[in-house]
Every structure is written in C-alpha cells, then in structure tokens.
Image 1 (cartoon, rainbow, N blue to C red):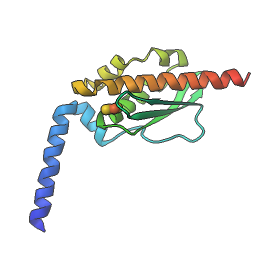
Image 2 (tube, rainbow, N blue to C red; image 1 turned 135 degrees about the vertical axis):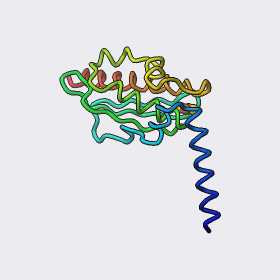
Image 3 (tube, rainbow, N blue to C red; image 1 turned 90 degrees about the vertical axis):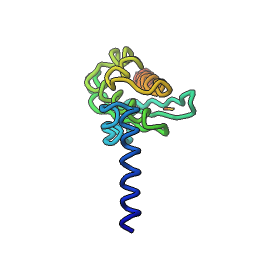
Image 4 (tube, protein in one colour; image 1 turned 120 degrees about the vertical axis):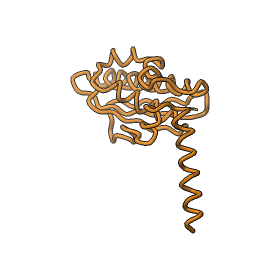
Length: 145
Ligand code: FES
C-alpha cells in the first residue's frame, strides 16, 4: 500500500510539475485555487458563450451604480479556461459596464502572464463571455424601461 501511495504521490508531483511549466507559476496557482469559480443566483448580468473549441464559459455579475460589485464564472473547459475565467472576473471587478467592453483576450493573457499557444483562445473566450454579460445587462435594462 505504501508503495502505491508513494507511486501516486510521485505521479501527482510529476503532473503538477508539468502543469506548472505549461501554465506558468501564476496560472498554475490559480488553477489550484480557482478564485471566483461558481454561480451567482439571480445575477444582474449573465454571459454564456460556446467557444469554437466546444467548451462553454459562463459569467455572473452583480452591478451596483454601474460598476461590477461581484462576479463569478464557470466553464466546462480545460485548466486554461478556468484560469482565464478567474482572471477575467478579477479584471472585471470594480469596472464600469463601458470598461468591461474594453477588456480583451490580450488583457486577460497579460494578467495571467501568458498561456500555452494552443490555449490562448481560452482567454479570448473569457473576454467574449464578459461582453456577452454586458449585452445581457443592457437587454434587461432596456426592457425595464
Ligand atoms: Fe476550450 Fe480551453 S476553453 S480549450
């Protein structure tokens, strides 16, 4: 049993080492502790985008005085999409709706410090999801009068 435990520990260490190398220290830490993950009930704004990769990302925001007071995300995607969603929400906090529309995939990549080449689109998916949430908010406020 001890040998199996040792083997599994070692395996996990190797997986973590590989992930740390691929994702960078900041991305790796966020993958291990995905801040802002989860849903918010009755959000003021909800974005949902299906990425070209087939993954879905959703974001939830509470808005107060035209600014993001609280936010969260969920994703069906890979580690990089979770990291992107988490940093995207972090970037969105405190921003006005207009400023949210200015957040780009490049902004999210730069706060992460980069992602593996094949996963860069995850950051763009996160940016699109923010923009979709703004659209959702605008639609509500229009129908409210
Ligand atoms: Fe689809 Fe990361 S979001 S691969």
